[in-house]
Image 1 (spheres, rainbow, N blue to C red):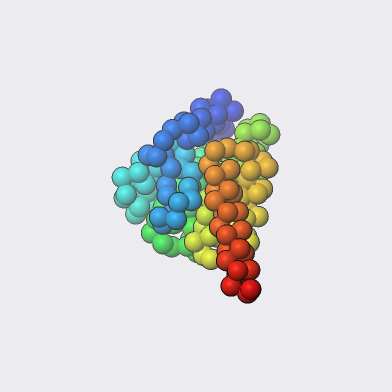
Image 2: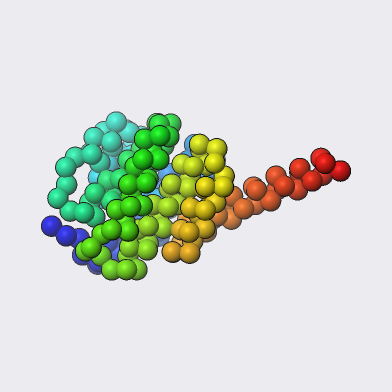
Length: 172
């Protein structure tokens, strides 16, 4: 079973155009993670039932793209449970799977990788690695300059620049 480009674009459009129910705020930091509508476990994540979300996202699936969607859901669910190592692994898997899918167009792969990189960047921030997060956000924006990725990159860049300005004032 393969996923059509039209089905993927429909799913992604719902995520990118909708408001807060499909976006998970990462530990109150103001950074946003993408949660794909109708992905395995997404409805449970929205309801705050993370254990059920994880079980649903880990259920066997035949389609490669479904596996990608499940990894995105796992990344968000584990981040909400503050299981950063598991979230990072799921995000890494989503990035890899988005790049290797055969049943979607190149532009759809770029969108998928951008969202997975965005989520991974948030996880890296939560783990305290601003440099790695910045790299993920920058690559995500290059792949697909969506509102989510651009806002996260802008927020982190501002935070880094603000920190440098304070350090310079303190040094004087």
